[in-house]
Image (cartoon, rainbow, N blue to C red; front, side):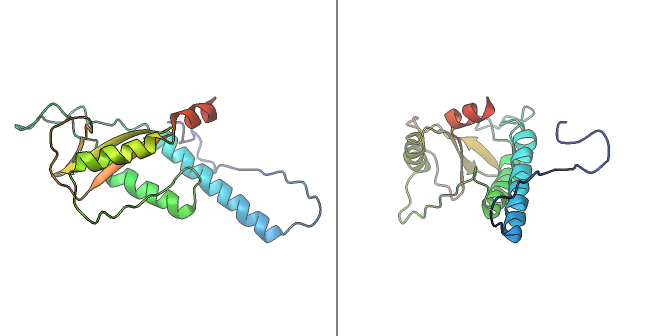
Length: 167
């Protein structure tokens, strides 16, 4: 596991800072601490959470199963609070958009519209709706009506930005 060092020594981070002009050391220290927090958050996200499989391979098929696999429960129990934590930390890679619908619409219509808005930003989006305790993939192009639901999860990543940062 890349995030767990083999030795038990604490990890050391060294900053080499050259002073030019007047420097507010308190501000500099706060910014450096923030950079370290954001970097650690990113490392945990990339190497621990984004490596979780989207679907449970051992999930049992239900009688009313229509060929859709339930989303791995980690996405509703771990990823959502982790993203909220990243947002509170001010991690630049995390943005939050909250929408309160005044009128209830079928989930597939709402998620298709949200997906279209996200796609215009060059982002690939995957939508899921909650049915019982499992999150089921939402096919927004399907004409099959999805039951109303109060909980939806939209996972999106700007693939162009990610590829350029990865190279």
